[in-house]
Length: 640
Ligand code: MIC
Ligand code: SF4
Image (cartoon, rainbow, N blue to C red; front, side, top):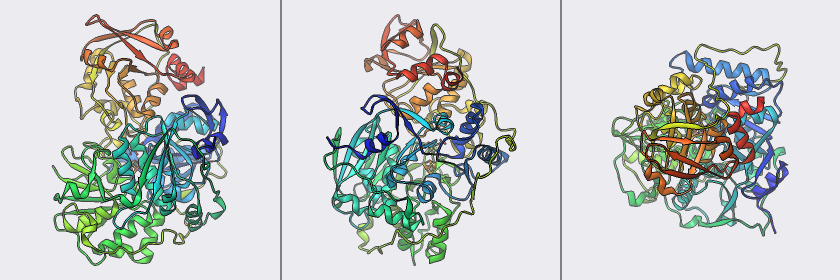
């Protein structure tokens, strides 16, 4: 029986366990990446582990999320990360260099290698044939310290591509189509592997757009084969030596197959407020728009921005629209400057901002009240733009640019305009001015720079004999980590200050939540389906831990958030009968008796002391995860 590409790469890295869907395995991690907003926690945790030198082939610390520096807080975080990076042999990427995923792809991505990143869009690396997985910060710290990562082996879905994209249809439309078919929870517990004749018609940046937004499917990762296009991409970055051809066996067997004919796709958009709320631009119609934002780790590549420049050339952005562009990397911006495309962009009236995440994570450029904002980003969760009542649509760069000129959502095919063919494999001159190399790092001679905003992270206690608490929140389906721990320009500077963040936990859903936790000495959260989707931020577990949350009892969980809860010693339980969800109310007192004994079995019983009922729940914990819950979190387990 032939092998999938995903399993081939996992097999090459297997250290413990056997590669069968559902099994717990430990794999070798070749590379890690962190970004600043999750990175401060990662490096605090790495320091707490007292390791001498990291065990990966390459670890990079990027600064790309918090670069506004409206006060000393961001700058303190940057200095802290830089100092720890130096101590431990981690390559440091200065603010302004660009977005971590774009930079990792350009500078360090190698087909067949594994990458673990403290950011949910780490699977961008799948575009170059890597197994690239997003994880909570603590998992990345451990991967740096030990060079390994443990995970439950995912199933593999095959997206079989045929045909070729038509003009004005792009890679973004491919992934929006896949999201429409599979939904935001369709990828949970799965790897999405792309194969078929259509693959050769997609460039590496196209593939990276698709694997990047596989995160929105809830998938563990997504992967493309490494072929001639991959070789050309690596050559354009001056790294042809890193090329390794890789593909699935011809007779590989997949758990599910989705057929996608690229020739049949049309321009699509994800409507407010979910990336899977997809319809065609034509069906949505000519809605009036106020803002267009082009950039983010999904759509800020050289080819994306060259297409945008070609559409804007000689035109003027509509008087009612603010067009803002954040390039993916310094290399891309420098190339656009050299070939004149930047002039076309500026002359059309676009606002070019720093090479960083920027508006994608609400760091500036919040739209006006009630605005319609078209964004080439990957998430349009309510409030994420920084404006609670904004209506955010996710679109391709082509759709974004043509709409910015017209002032309304536009299907570019209407224009009849022929877009120029862009060579994605231009020679990108090597420039490492933004990188600080760790060579000569010495743990004993380099200190850690810790400003006043950096506070210790909370630690849990070992599992008590019984876990008891009142229901302090009853949430609906698809709760995002942005809902749990919002991150806009007000809050992002406090990512290393859990006590401060705790005042804003669940702010958009229930502003009484922090006070209720304090009054009840913590408690239990009830969730719906896909609880904790979205970002990898472990703050969505650490802040609830700080507020005393002991259990989250939900209908189902998103992968990274579930791991973050376990790493923090918070018990994630799933209703065995989803209809029991209806029976629990805010304020009910719940108890898990004989906690350790029950966790060691498969099922647990939760008693509702207020109503007298009992509910059966599944913990689905692997052996290692049980140990973490018993110890009160991963760090406690490691110390023991
Ligand atoms: C995001 O896109 O939500 C983020 C900000 O990049 C997060 C990480 C974070 O919250 O710091 C992610 O995707 O993991
Ligand atoms: Fe940055 Fe946005 Fe990408 Fe997250 S999704 S890494 S905030 S650009």
